[in-house]
Amino acid sequence: MVDPWAEPDRWEKEAPQVAAVISRKGRITRKHIEDSRGRLKIVARTGVGVDVSRIDVDAAREHKVWVTNMPGVNAAAVAELVFGQMIALARHTHLANTEVKAHRWAAGPRFQGSELAGKTLGIVGMGNIGTRVALRARAFEMQLLICDPYIPASHVTALGGRWVGLGELFAQSDFVTLHLPFNKETRHMVSTKQFALMKKSAFLLNLARGGVVDEQALVECRREKRVAGAAIDVMETEPPGKDHPLLALDNVLMTPHLGGSTRESQENGEWGAAQEVVRVLQGEAPQNPVIEGKR
Image 1 (cartoon, rainbow, N blue to C red):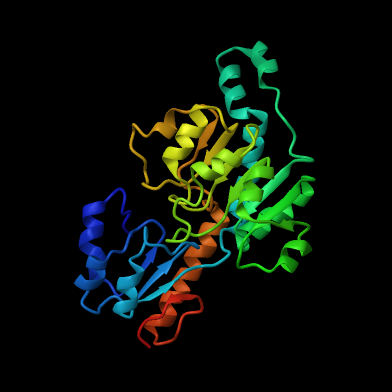
Image 2 (cartoon, one colour):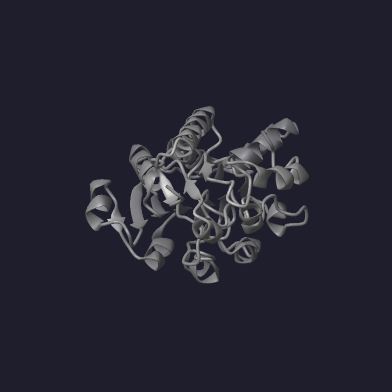
């Protein structure tokens, strides 16, 4: 086992020397694939994401390396964190915690918050995670707006939501949560135009992929108090630099890409990825192929 962040040199040396990679954090590049000279048969992701920030999918496709993922394995974990962060933002619990620990109990009235009940939640992306978020939103008595061009309106209606375009969702939502992959279509999908549409009392949550949000646009928006706050679990560059301006902003909750980091989701993802490796090395096709390899 190699931690690619803690042991980057060892990762670079050993990644091309194996027949299979089970990966959560490790990046598989074209050089890794080409240096393996056909040895590498499969890259099995323990999570949902298979994007260019993790795996050079073009190189995998060219060299017939199987790439698999574990769809839905972290859906409950991410959906639950969405509501944890929404409540933290709406009720200022992170700031109140700091005040109490500094012996400023009387500061409590400054942290009057708002309820989720009756508010409008906009969900961008209605896959496994977005669907779990929608189901939980009903228990919080929230109204639902949903934007996903690949999901039929009947699916949205069945979940108690209303299908809308991206602009309407940003303009009408009190909370906007993103649950979509990172690709050419979604890069900086949320930028200055979308922030300009949001209510000043609204919050943005990105627990999807770094790069979907234009980080500089978010920095400028929050500095000017044009939105009430944000919860960011993913960054364009991970980890971010120590001088990244998002780290210095108030009412921006930052977490280190831990949306799917629960014991349950990690165990299920690792076990599922290991099973995919066994199938491929035994000459069988995997159950969740993203890129098809040699048969």
